[in-house]
Length: 285
Picture 1 (cartoon, rainbow, N blue to C red):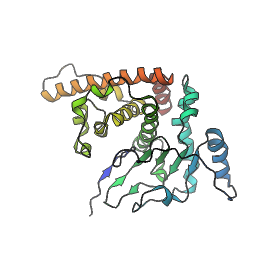
Picture 2: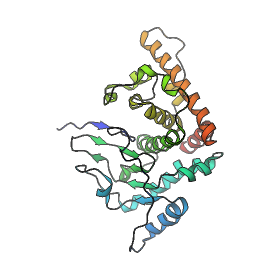
Picture 3: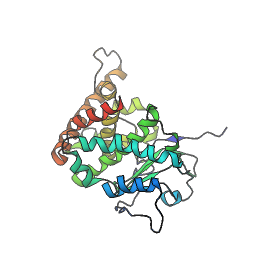
Picture 4: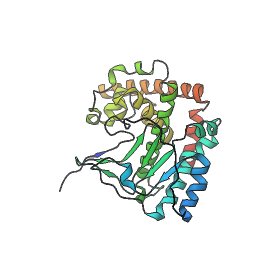
């Protein structure tokens, strides 16, 4: 059986975001009679947030050689309801969040039925395009009660949306210096294990690829992972191995990063990330 390498790409393939960082302004399909679904999208997303939802003509939104499948029509609205409930609504509910969301919302959302199959045999689980476009994959398997499926979707959207903060307002002061020696060389992050990343002071192997991706991954994990503190913050007080000590040291670095990020968010966006996390976690219960 042919072996397929699965790569989690939350804006991750190659550089993590597509090279073109220009915004794609939401546009309406021309000369097409609106179906009930299209009218729902028009009323609730295009008119409300100036956000275009693309679920047709998927070949326009993937690179040459990539194979994808469209979403089934009957999963499009449930997926949009999921996006509304777990991404949009938390920002609308958190203090100062609605103004930030409406002023920074990406203008284009792409829905794909399955994963993106690449010419080299790898599989892309989700992509994001520098705050301009977010692509959700595996929509046909929608199941908000499935933690693995849900985590993939939320990591995709929270990661990408956090990129907007450092792109427009820079990283927190001296953020890059917290774990300077922990970043990996270009293209080698996938050789690192989850535990190895924590020992370096990162929430995931991909976070080691650059300070910008480290920032976005830390925000995403902090918001969606119910076990964030247990996995990345709380230290083992009974360490008796070098590996345990290294993991404790890494968690201390992650704690520094979370403090720097939350302070930065409050300063430049007016949003309390702890409050936002609380809203999200309550919805996930």
